[in-house]
Amino acid sequence: MTLVDVRTPDPKRFIPGATGDWEVIVGMEVHAQVLSNSKLFSGASTEFGKPQNSNVSLVDAAMPGMLPVINEECVKQAVRTGLGLKAQINKRSLFDRKNYFYPDLPQGYQISQFKDPIVGEGKIVISLGPDRQGQFEDIEIGIERLHLEQDAGKSMHDQHATMSYVDLNRSGVALMEIVSKPDMRSSDEAKAFMTKLRAIVRYLGTCDGNMDEGSMRADVNVSVRRPGEGFGTRCEIKNVNSIRFIGQAIESEARRQIDILEDGGKIDQETRLYDPNTGRTESMRSKEDAHDYRYFPDPDLLPLEFDDAFVTALEADLPELPDDKKERFVRELGLSIYDASVLVSEKAIADYFEAVAAGRDGKIAANWVINDLLGALNRTGKDIEQTSVSPAQLGAIIDLIKAGTISGKIAKDLFEIVLTEGGDPAEIVELRGMKQVTDTGAIEKAVDEIIAANPDQVEKVKAKPTMAAWFVGQVMKATGGKANPQAVQALVKAKLGIEE
Image (cartoon, rainbow, N blue to C red; front, side, top):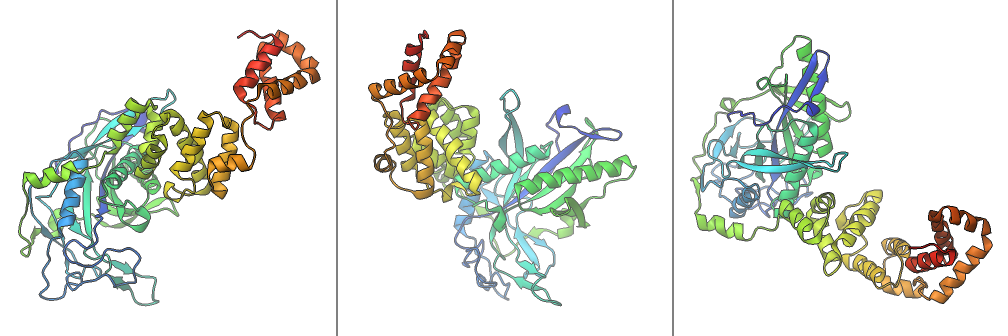
């Protein structure tokens, strides 16, 4: 890949060193496990969590005479992902053998794609912010390629005191390797890139994005340079399996390289691992180049070819992707860019919000989903799929507010009841006597009592009309929060002689 610098040095992203400023350059190679029931070249299951070596066919174990057969669904998933990345789809691609030897690679080579991948150049737009002015910065990150390849097995060194075991359940599982261009200039940009890429494949249904299960992981290439100079020597940090660790690994590795260069040393091109316990990267091996793998076309597999109709049919069934959905939420529902960004960050959140917002005020629905529902989930460490409040229940709470049956304060209490106990919001309001008091006679009686009991506060209001809010609060307290706030406010002002 020819390295092209498409970014203008930005001082706000510079890293200060002892001898001046530095700029970090980041590129990523993301391995995303294809969502399919069977492996790339065999019919063995891809189900996660099965006993060791139970998802293994004769092909996966490289038994003599076994030939690979391409899984069409994996090809479709790769094309769908390429379309989601606004990338060039190559209707003719080749599979190659990438030769290296390791115990968990039974063939002695990996079937991958080298010179002719299934997907060419594309792009992802990431959004950083909001800043202190509430503004967002959109940055385009180039995609170099996406190619299909098979995963290796897993070596386990902690099962026996003197021996290592090999689990081939992952051997032959289809991976999409998505290679970015070296367009990122900070750890925040890299985290945003990974977050956006994971959201895209989840929307498309081509990868589940579960980094903790290893179905999505990143090799992070890091180099540093003086602003305006050419690219430096990069080091690759292998198999980083969380977005938080990606950011930490980049910051640690950039600082390590800066310290070496400022001491007069040079950076060796190598592969490193990030240890989250120490917060440092550690050397693993010298970095291999393509010629070290002795790539050559796989003689057992014909070129992969398809026509425009194949691509068009897949494109027609693509779902609405995060950027398009965000733009629609802002345009049609009047949401802020920030709120829309939060809601589209995960497909499950966007789906939940749309179910709540259907036939209701979008801004009100967004406030409840973001502030109350997601806030509650964050406090308990749960995600949207684990919520105990259904879209219908939350929608019913919003409807009760709109109908004047309950006040906003009562709605907060009602939400907590539904969250912890469940139930139909309307029935809970009836059974627990939570209805809002709208009887102006009853409210007026409470207002009169509060005014009569607080003559000193009445005098203060004459000098400072905004003090009327104190009376409103006292009336709401006296009525258990059930009085209609608008009616209370109007009566308090009328009784105190405060003009609108």
